[in-house]
Length: 264
Image (cartoon, rainbow, N blue to C red; front, side, top):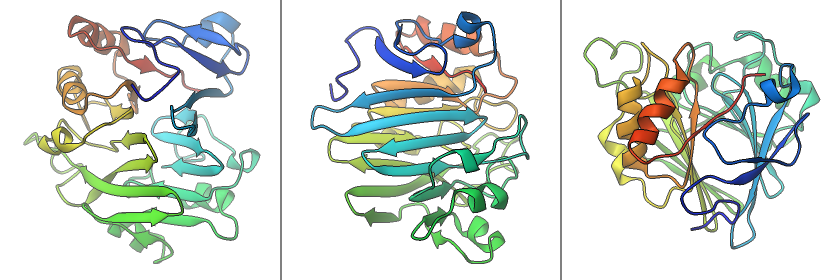
């Protein structure tokens, strides 16, 4: 067990959430909307690994994540107004690293990237996204690894396998990412179905898996992916109009706990 903030059997950890700071979460859902009787403006969860790696995760909307590992700020697929509600990233700390999984408008947004960029920001993207951004990104393809200070970034496959979905995310085009710092490993799946490559991912502490029909996984596929990745802490993200209660019920029936973050 690598995350001190997780106990065996249930995910009991401290969520620092605007309006419900210090709330202990021991179920599958952080429901601060209900607790505050208003829409959550920002939701943050923090962890500390046994080796002292500090991990802080901000959830914005859809597939947009903010992650701080120690003093490094990473943003994954930041989007401003291409996905509602609009997000103003000028109010967030500037990025040390920005990761783009693929070129769809709900993942690639030059405006958001501009708002987050400072001198020294490293922008990483799959080849097509880098091309759209005018070549102003470090290209990573499936299987590539990049070392940035104490952080290792692996680009891993993300694609559709179902015959009626392969036009959305063809094989070898898009990226998922695995982040490793010391003893902490975080998997951000991107837009994908339950692909065989997930079983090759080892020692994943935190995983973000999508469940957004018709583009990514069905609830049943999500359960298979969760079993393959076997993360200690699992997030359902990028869930669109999916009934997340159905997903959580299927996971529970299979002895798996997961967290659904509220949209801002």
